[in-house]
Every structure is written in C-alpha cells, then in structure tokens.
Image (cartoon, rainbow, N blue to C red):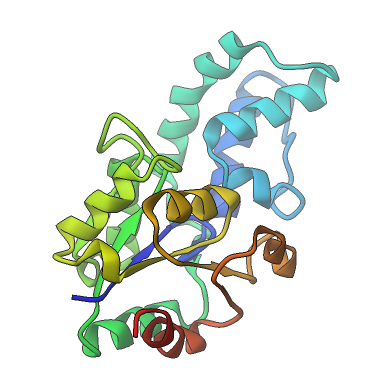
Length: 222
C-alpha cells in the first residue's frame, strides 16, 4: 500500500502561537514577561520546547543559556502547553481535505512527529482529526527520534504501508534528513516560517498548497 507520512508541527498544523505562549508562560513565572514573539520566533517554536527556552534565556542574558535552567522550566512548559494546546492552533488550509483525498484514493496515512506522543494525540483529538491517521509515532514512542529513520519506518509499518512505497511530508531540515536516512522521497511545505527558502534543502518536491498533494503523491509514488 502506498503511504504518506506527515510531520505535525509546521506541516499539518500551525502550532507556533500556542507553543510560544507556553514558553512565555515560563518566562512570566520567572518575572520576565513575554520574551518570545509568535511571528518572529515561529521557526524556533517548530524545533521544540527546549529550543524556545534556550532562545528566550539567550535574549535575557545575551549569552548561552544554562541548561539546568532550561531543564527546570521544560516540565512547566509542557504542562502549560497541554492545558492550552489548541487555543490558536489550526490545520493549514486544505490539509484535512488533502488527507481525506489520499485516504479515498487508497493511500495509508500516518504521522511521525518529534512532539511527545501524548501531546500529539491530545492535539489531534481536540482538532477532531485523529481518526484520519492510521498511525502516530511521537518523540517518545521509540528510544530515538527524527532524524533517526526508525520512527518514520515504524509510522509506515503501523499504518499498514510499505516503506519502499512511502513518502514524508515535512517542513524542516530534520524531515529532510529523516527521509534521506530512510531512503524515501520528501516533500517540504513552503507555507511554513522558512517559506520557499526551504528549497535550499533540495527535497524531491516542494508543496506550495495542500490542493496539490494528491497529485504530487501520485507522481512520487507512481
């Protein structure tokens, strides 16, 4: 079965505002106010909670952050995020329809994300789209995470697909490296924070709109 595996943050949904809000809640609790900006720091948000905390502490001190501080605040960030996970998050235009179109055409679809699996399950459920995906592999599902290929391989297998007839949809260098390690094509979206600059990673395809995905998947997995 042909299979399309999706990254989540920055690929299927714009989660940046809720992620930034969780980090800013940590900084406010320390008496610093909002240190991060939802628009300017969206790309950092898609690299995870610790990346946001490191950026914020660097801005506050103008030097490399103390990892002890980062690790101390990380659980609080996750707690705030879990309590407010879908306040501003929305699926990108056409994403849900494109996933459904793939399913209707006989593709298996799944998710491989570096978001903790519990939070990914919660987010998709609150968005009302968890049932669209046959598999979900998160950052803590296996002992390794992307760009190690093992989570991607597991996502394909759990969706009932075949690795050699699969592809990844993503938005970052991590996704590019994951696909290369797994030996599968990747399409990188151009509507994330990097825009068309993501072309620098030389993916097998660029995805400008989810309206184009069914045709693109049909071509790359002919």
